Image (cartoon, rainbow, N blue to C red; front, side, top):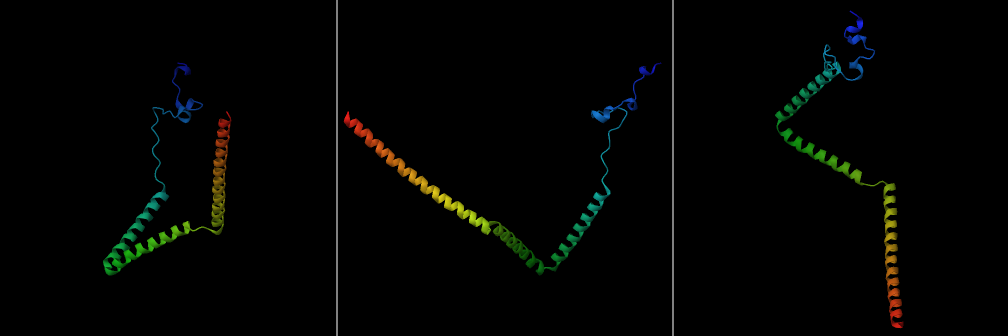
Length: 140
């Protein structure tokens, strides 16, 4: 038997199909999904522990009674004040922004004044045109 009569083994290829065409060779099993990294498992462990601590603290606060009834509304009030202040900070303008807004308002006023003058000039031109047409019609 000649070597060319034998089917080629995967090791005989210069570039095995699995490496360059995403083809699977039947004798090979598909790659298994990667196992979770040890860091991920440690991170999950720390998150689990922190949730247990948080839950135990909340349950101990709830068992105290009157403090919990005051604490929750005060926390909500504090949070709403914080949100309100952060929104106001975003709304207030810096001196440079205020100066730019004033410049834009001045330019808008000038543009409105010029548009009004253009409208008046158009009315005058229309009146003159009507007068010229009336004169031309009377002269005929």
